Length: 139
Image (cartoon, rainbow, N blue to C red; front, side, top):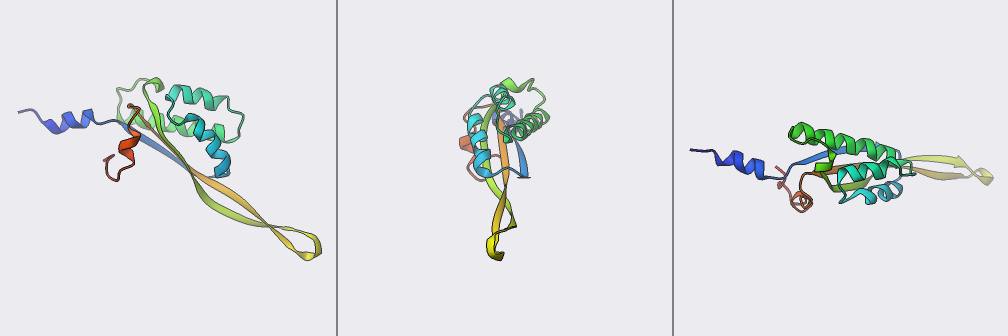
């Protein structure tokens, strides 16, 4: 009798993630880059990031390449990035370093050096993001 659990596992969408933590870009500036690639094909997203003038573009480019490598490790049948979609791309606020600059009359001025946590998920199905938001749906 054939095993039905392996058939269901191959029918499930492939979802691979990559996370970059405590990157020294403000979340506001990193979100401008991440919003460009959300919902795009991975090969299009890589070309967008390669020529993006913003500083966070190179870090997100490396992160997206890592997510593609994770997808290829999960499923060796994936040949290249054109088979994958960026289904989730999030930027969360990381740690904030607090520094002080001297100001007039002996005062100190607080400077906040913000950081970000960036996470990217790629899938072989464009609509896999709706199943990712539910707890335990990806397992």
